[in-house]
Image (cartoon, rainbow, N blue to C red; front, side, top):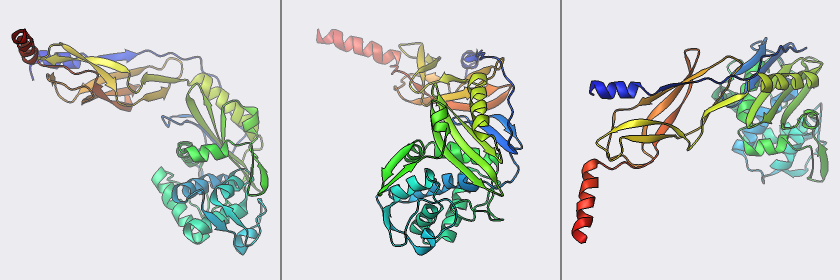
Length: 363
C-alpha cells in the first residue's frame, strides 16, 4: 500500500457531536431495579441490579418465549389434573379441557395463570421439570448469568431466582418476538370461551407501553418488567420487591427518554461516507450502511465513528460489495459497528475508454 493511499484511508475519521438534553435525577422504592435501552443494551440506571432475588410471575416472560419458539399457536392442548389444580393466580382451566396454545398464552400473560403455565410446560416438554430445563438452557443462551428456573410460573422455590439485570436481558430478547409482543400488549381478549383482561396497568398509564409482565408472591413482593417505545427507541424497566412499581416505572421511562435519547449515526441503506478508488472512472465511491446502529447519549456525550476499509479500493467495484466497516466509540471504548457496502458500481478507466471506442466504431 502506498503512503498516499494509507493517508487517504486514515483520513476517513469523523466525530459526531450529539448533545441531548440535560440529565435528571431518578430513584425507585425497589430493592433492585434497572433501566436498559433495548437496541444497544446500554444500562441507563441501575440499583442493586445483580442481587439474586425471587421474581414471581415475571418468570412467565421466559415461559412464553420458550413456548412460542418451540410450539405452534394452533396446537390443541389437553389440560391435565395437575395443571387444573395448580395453586395461585389462574385462568380457571378445568381438567380435560382443550385449548389452543395461543389461548393458553393469553391466559398466561394477561391473567397470570399458573394453571396455564403448567399446561403449556407439559405440552411443550412433557413435564414441568423438563420444561424448566429448557427454560434454563434458553436463559443461558440469552446471557442470563445469575438466574435459575425451577418451574414455569414463578411460584417460590429455593432454586428459582434471577436478577434485575438478567430480567432486563430477557425482556430485551422477548420484545424482539412479534407474537409475544402482540400478546403482552393486548389489554383484553376473548378466546377459548373466556374474556381475559391484562393485569398490567402501565398499558393504560403510558403511551407507547408494550407491556410484559407483573408478578407477586408474599416472599418476592411486587415485581414488574415493562417496555415502552417512543420515537423508535425502546426501553425496558425492571423493579423487584417494589411497593410503588407503577409510579417507579413511569419515572424511570420519563428519565430514560429525556436523558438518553437514541442517536442514530448509521441507518440501513443510507450513505455513511465515501472512500477513494484507484483506477476508476470515479475517484471516490459512496459507502452505505449494511445495517443500522443506534446508541443512547446523555448530554455532553459524543460518539466517534471511524471508517475502516478491508483494503485499499481499486476498480472495478460492484454496487453492494462489502468493503469495510464503520466503528463507533464512546469515550474511547468501542460500542458497536456496521458493515459498509459500495453504494454504486465503479468501472475501471480502461473499460470506460474501450466502451467509448466501441460506440465510435458502431457509428
